[in-house]
Length: 72
Image (cartoon, rainbow, N blue to C red; front, side):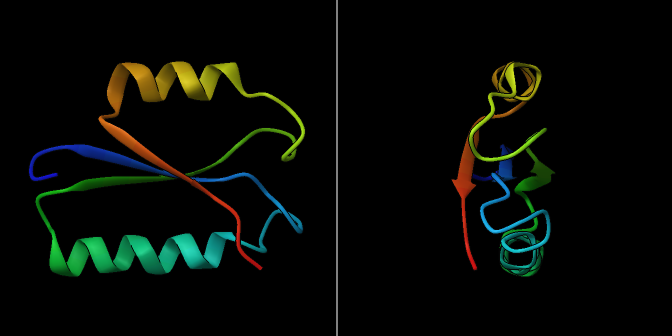
């Protein structure tokens, strides 16, 4: 992953802040242990049942990998 861009995507399961904090912890871990990996933390627009084509297009153009997650 060195030199790559990793998107951390919250699908808002359980509300707009339910899983975000877990992804923030993941981002902090990458910053500390793998500083050569750029992380981008984002919410999808809407909720877990709606598509976000603009975000998927952005990830395809600017990202190398994505973790799409839920947590509560």
